[in-house]
Each structure stands twice: as C-alpha cells, then as structure tokens.
Image (cartoon, rainbow, N blue to C red):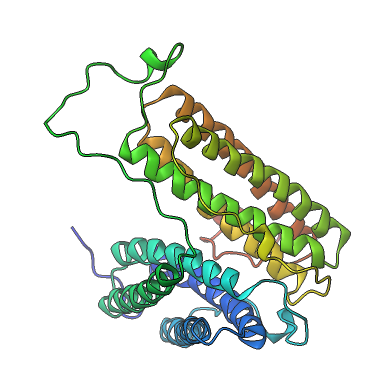
Length: 337
C-alpha cells in the first residue's frame, strides 16, 4: 500500500538515484569533453558527442528535480576536474569501449531508480534515460561489430532435448572433475572478466598521470589486483576451451600529463569497484560450481579492500561529498544548551 508523500517531497530512494546520477554524469561530462578534444575517428566522434549531450541533459533535469523538491544540489565535478590541454591518454577505440561499459552501468542503474521512484515525473525521467541510453548502446554495438572490435561472447550448443540436473553441482564439485560450465556461468564469467579488465586498463592509464603519489600508488595496486581478478575469470573459461575478452592495455598512450583531477580519478575507480560488487554478487548467485563460488568470494573481498582504500583516501583529501543522511536524533539530544 502506498502512502501519499507531501507534494514535491523527494523520498530517500529518489534522492539516492538522483544524487548518484548527478555525481556520475558530472564526471562523465569531464571525461567526454576530454575525449572529444582528442578523438580523430569520424564514426566514433558522434557517439561520444551523444554521450556528452545525454550527460549534460541529465544534469539539467536532475538539478530541476532538486530545486523543485527544495533539496541541496550536489557539487559533483566541474571544469576544474578536467584539463582539455592534456594530450591523448587513450586510443579512439578505447573511448568507444569506455562508453560501452559506462552505458551498461547506466542502464542497470536506471532500472533500479525507476522501481524505487514514487513520483511519476521522476519515473518518466528515468524511463527516458533508459530509452536514450538504449539508443546509444545500440549505436556502440553496431559500430563495434562492423569493425570486429569487441570479442564475441561464447556460445553453447542446444541440448537437443529437455534435461534435468542429477547432482547439486556444489558439494559434488568440491573435489574431482568439474562439470562443464553452463550458459549462465559463462555469461557472468565473460562479462565480469571484461568489466574487471576494463578497471585494470583504466587504472593503468590513471597511474601514469596521477599527480599525487598516494593516488598513483593506489592505481598501480589496483592494476595488479584487477588484473589478477580478471585472470581468475579467464582461467575458468579457458579450462573449458572458451574464448576470453579482449585486453585494452595496448590502447593506452605513454602520456604522463593528466586530463583529469586526482579527485575525479579516485571517484571513478570507486564507482567501478562498487559496480563490480553488484555484478560479482549476480555472478555468485547464478553459479552452482564450487570453484566458481570460491572465486567470486575472493574477488568480492579484493573489491571490498580496494573500495575501503578509495573511501579513506577521498575522505582524507576532502574529496568525498557526503551523501544525504537522515536526522541525527541522538546527536540533537546530546547537544549542549
């Protein structure tokens, strides 16, 4: 049963969805302004322009919702967080792959935001975000396929008849020979390898240009950690003679001049780590082989450690914008008159 909230009052779920979108899209504006400054490919450029336009449109819309609800507008990221005079750090094809991964994250977030929103205009807004991101996603995939840029997700043959599992696939696989991977496990392993490999490559690029030694050292550690986690997914796929995702390290230049602030790069790393936790959880929940379950548990722990380091670093440097909280009743009660 739904209870009517006060007119124009934003719920905590609506605030959360809008707040994180503002943060993410203000970051995206900085990233895409840099990409458009260096891109040369005439077919990739319109896709980057569309991504920038969508991010700018989102910021305008979200600002309007906050103003209507008489709610504080986040600071997010500004022109101070991007250096348009910096040379190319990533190839044109990497910018396309970047947009592919980030659009996937957006589509996932919009679905959750829609189901948690109570105001119709906010629901409609996130539906519009989904529709426009779908169009962007399809443009990316069409171009990537025409150039054979992205590796193809492995296929499985039709079983030819209805079959039922005769063993749990968990206890029976603790020792001895493992059963073949099923389609759900393959899909999650492949996409988690691709996304985690993306974190490795982006961290590698960031490690070259970070101004702070602390940020630079974290990015180098994240390169090793994310690389190890991506390799762990690849090894499981390769044991069943299945292909693994493409690698992108070679698409990073030798530039050491940063196009982005250290604050933006740490936030970006945190965004990807938090997203990875959700995808790892989905992969864990759909896996029935003990070795895969144990692998997801380990990469989950690794991501949690990385996330903790990012959080402490951002708080230490005053980069972590506080997420809106409920009223601190205990604090009010303890105030001194």
